[in-house]
Length: 376
Ligand SMILES: *Cc1c(COP(=O)(O)O)cnc(C)c1O
Image 1 (cartoon, helix red, strand yellow):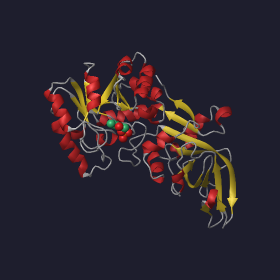
Image 2 (cartoon, helix red, strand yellow):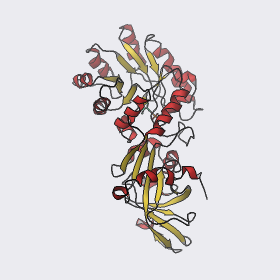
Image 3 (cartoon, helix red, strand yellow):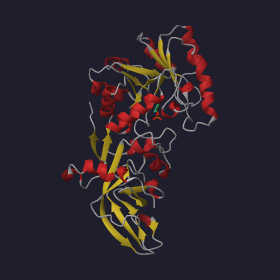
């Protein structure tokens, strides 16, 4: 049996919070977003990256946790640079931040015809194709350039950068992105760093940025002037495994709908997904893949009850069946932690054959959201 400290048990965190609105949420899957934990994670990253600015990546609605609330709280914690993916995300974030002073960069860049929207919302496009560069150049504004160093996704080439340097383009940030930083021993990290150095040196007056969450922990040489963490702000470990330096921000729990005894030889779920080899006690939990618990996590994922692990047996759309052999006191109505201090994000990601980023961004609107801590 795996037990985690009782102080981390759901009864003292998400469930308690959810239980404050019993009428509305008793039967629902709850997602509690702990903004104090977010602030603590931001402080942890900022301390590690001391000397560099710590920007915040809040694309995909703040990894599904609410870009407006996340960014407002981080702004109150001192964050002044934000990254989103889409233009529409940038527009929404600018509205959410109101008069607060903040640079919002749009990773999608800017396409012809989007200049006005970009400028009206005071957004800074991350220029990743010659077409972005041409489009933005006509506005005469400062440029953020995203250069290719080894990931081979959308980015400018070294030749593109040389041409811009020769033309004295007004560049204020040169950035690139690491593909394998979660593994500090991967030689591609060093190769990307070596490619990045001469490219950023083409613009001696511009600032430079290479690292997301994982890169922050590769050492000082990778941090440059700005780091751009996303997932570790939200509690994901920079190495894709649970990391006690980061607190859970997304706390998801759901009620036990029924407890039942299953006899040896019986099957559970669609297609007899799980076959009981021996008699067992199981609990049916009111959450499922429609809330964002990936179906693929059934084989090794788990819920947690009072700090005790209860392995998943079957994950269906609205119900998860868990083995409560180690939780003899579990009762119908009790809440099961599916994500949080015990049910750690990276563990669930590994169980689902995925990454923490996907787990968070797949949590569906059906999970009733509440915020814990000041939004600001
Ligand atoms: C998504 C993204 C990040 C943040 O990555 P995390 O792994 O979530 O820290 C940083 N930079 C760029 C360019 C990104 O696309």
